[in-house]
Length: 244
Image (cartoon, rainbow, N blue to C red; front, side):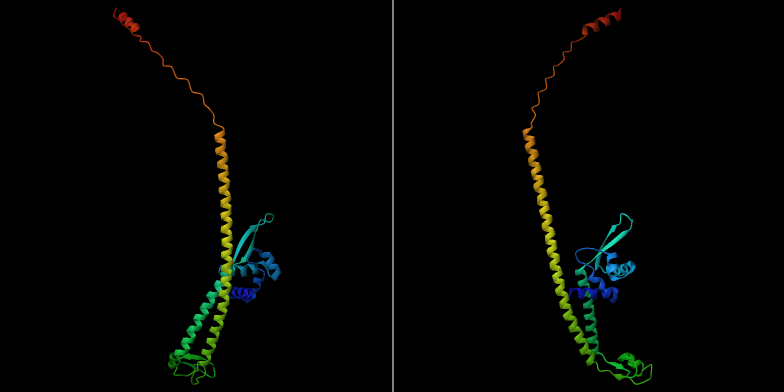
């Protein structure tokens, strides 16, 4: 069921001929684009055109790796299931809105039709043309909308059933995403705890080393103050010589 829904998404975006690519794309690992081209019997450019169209809507993701020998880049692709299902749901909602609008229009307005040319006009346009067909000149006839309204309601009911299926698949995928996220958080917390325990152990080792290797420093000898003797006597003698 899920693959059928994903094929519907791809056909909406890239055409009916592109839906077989869903069988080769995986949600967990990335697939080499050359492998996809070989299995679908398409050229690499044809495969890339399909994938680029789908990628524009965020329905696939890619990574690239450089070939060390040849020097060019090769792309690897995987499908984004949750985004694809949400895109399909949005498309269905638009269709349902369109059907609702048509039902309301058919219930409240009158339409006229040419039985020969099968051309349909609303009441305003029919009045402008004097209730005659522009193509053959025949008189326009009031159309009975009851059958069309029944068909539109059946289409709406079918869309509602399909929508319920899509919503169920979306709930499953969201559940998977939450489990995956919870697993990643748990793993990150485990790594963090291990790192904290490692740091604590290292700090303990360092503190033990510092306690066991205390060095006793010798006291520095006190500096003795120099005794300066006054030189007054000599200064006096010199001054007496100068006077003579």
